[in-house]
Length: 272
Image (cartoon, rainbow, N blue to C red; front, top):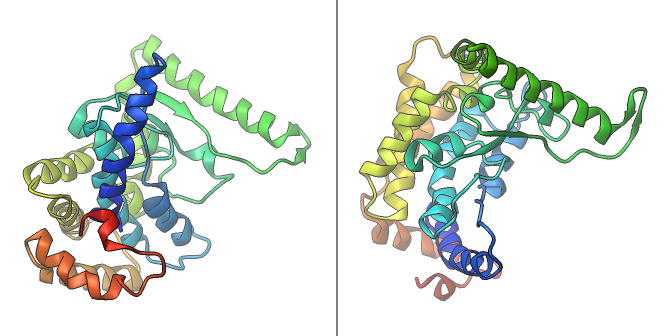
C-alpha cells in the first residue's frame, strides 16, 4: 500500500500537479504519506491507546519515505508538506527544504516525537485543530500563539549562535522516548535514506530496504527500550520482511490474489 501501490499513485498524480503549478507560475511544493504513516502514528496513540505497537508505526514511517519521495522525483521542489514526518529522511536524500510539525500538533494526534521533528526543519507549522473557546481565546488563536513562541525560540537560537545546542536538545529529548522518535533522529534517518538510495531498483526494493534498515537500527541500539508487545511485534515484522522475495514482480504476484478481493481495486489501473 505504501511502496508499491502508493508510489504508483504518486507517479501518476504528481507530474500533473507539477505541470499545473508551472502553468500558473507556481512552485510545486511536496506531499506526505499521511494516509499510511500518519494513520499508524495516530493509531499507536502516544501513551494513550497503543492499538498498534510503536514499532509498527516506526516501520511505516520509514516505508513512507518511498512514497513521499516520488513527488520530488516528478518535479516537486519543496518545501515538503508539514505532516510528512518522514521529511527528515526525504531531506537526507534530496536536500530539499522541508516544513515540519510536532509538539503543538498534539491537538490533532499523539506522536512521542514532537521535539525531534523540529531538528532539521526549514519551516515550522501546526496541525488542524477543532474549533473551541478556551480561557485564552479560540483554539486556533491559542495554538497560533504557541507556534509563534516556538518559531521565535528557533530563530533566537540562530541569532545567538546556539543552533547546534538547540538542535541537540530537540533530538536528545525524543531519541529514546519511543521508536517513532528514534527513527526521526537525523543520523538514523540518514541511514534509512541511504538504504533507499542503495536499493533503487524498484519502488518495492526501496520500501523493503527502508523497513529492514529501520528495524535493524531499532533492534541494534541497546538504549532504545521496548515493551514486550513492541519487541515481539517488531521481531515478527522483521521475520516477515526478511522472508519476502527480492524482486518486485514476485512480491506483486504474491499479493495480487489477496488484493483482488479488495472492493474497487483494479490491478490494471496500476499497470499490474
